[in-house]
Amino acid sequence: MADQGLDVDALIARFRERAAAVKQRNLPPVAGPERTRFIEQAQRDHMDFAIIGDAEGTLEDGILTLRVDLRPKSGS
Image (cartoon, rainbow, N blue to C red):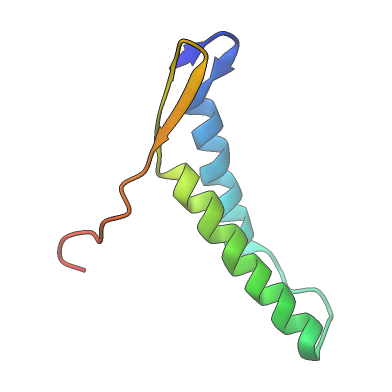
């Protein structure tokens, strides 16, 4: 959906791409607490990007609405 110069579908697709990139990110050469913080941040980044990447978006009257179903998938 494109409106007012904002392509909502493309925006959501970019978040999907970012989530995949975080999953593929290599660990820098750090150890100890810094490594733990890096891993924890990568996990949060992935979750944030994946949530937005799973959204259904609409732009109506200048208001962007992202709808995300956070219910567990059936069979999980």
